[in-house]
Image (cartoon, rainbow, N blue to C red; front, side, top):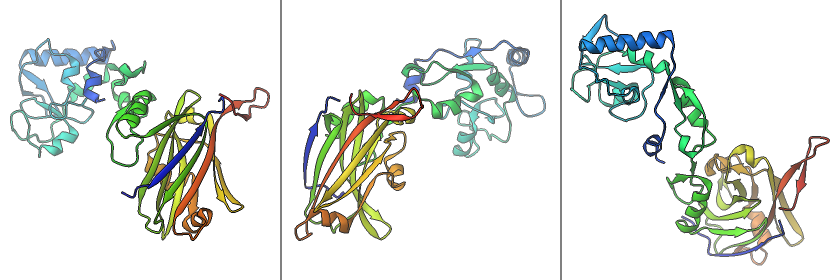
Length: 340
């Protein structure tokens, strides 16, 4: 990985889980009382009492008795991946169930009894699932929502309380968590510099700027307005041209990010380039932001011009500031608020 060789930072303050672990803390499913649910439950209970599990084949197929102590939540848990099962729910001739994803993974063999699975659907269990209402799996992180079983999955993929991925771009870090945890993780584990203040003044130096590879050079975190912001600076190939790029990401969700703006400026020798925009949420990956070119992009020749001298060494000074947009109560327009 291409690394920066020296770095100066002058920051001025201007007055401004694991799914299973989370699931273990959740309440048990809620049952809606409805005619269809009553009928489905009665059918299941009746079938279980005679040792038959209802299935997609004509009539029932012999299967093990279902203990009354077994919860519906456990019945809907795939024995292979332990995730909740969604239609189509498959079963073998002995009544063992598993999800459609795992059916392909086990090569059409029941992982419990090794019988061939075939194409038997467990329609009774699918019907029981329709009667359930479950809390979001991010319940322990603060989400208060409860959803019908088949709507829960879609919500969880977009839930505002879902954990954030580590925003560090120098490696494929798999750590997830809330923002305070990730801010500490960046500082302690990735050794990222964390500064307080809404303005910044960085100097990036590299002795051989003509050797440009796709590489992250620097990540710095700023804490202002009670939030954390990630300033990225890196070099990569844009088509056939090597470029340098600086951009800001907000450590929070997209709706909160829209409340802030930032500017970046680089220049020397009587010339300057400026960029102004809204920081992207860290919900958007570092690569997604970079590939959308949403930031200050400096061509290598221009960067060397700004560096001065014989153009054999990169010396870029990037300055900028972050401010909060304030809603104008009369016009509805946003006006900048430069003070914290």
